[in-house]
Length: 144
Image (cartoon, rainbow, N blue to C red):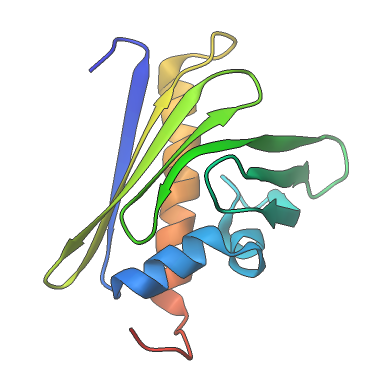
């Protein structure tokens, strides 16, 4: 793996369709896309197709800071993987690996140069852990 690439992962004991929907649909993204409780995602837009654009507004709950986490999809294979390019040119790859009792989600991303790789890894992992908690504590009406 490239020296500048960071990998994080989690395992979720839910069907692949449910994990996929909760990772990709804006009405779910706003519930889990934050690294700590003092942050949130007040809005999310997601055109989940090759060439489609996504934008998640990330904001401090106290109103002190906000930014858009956004980019363009390079590849989307439903229930399998997503790759995209962030607005700053960095590449991100998300893999959904279906296993007998759940789904392993693996994210590989190119680190940016402003913060340490360890800090970036911890932040992205915290968001992925929140995703796991959200999926594990809610149930889809549509069973897969």
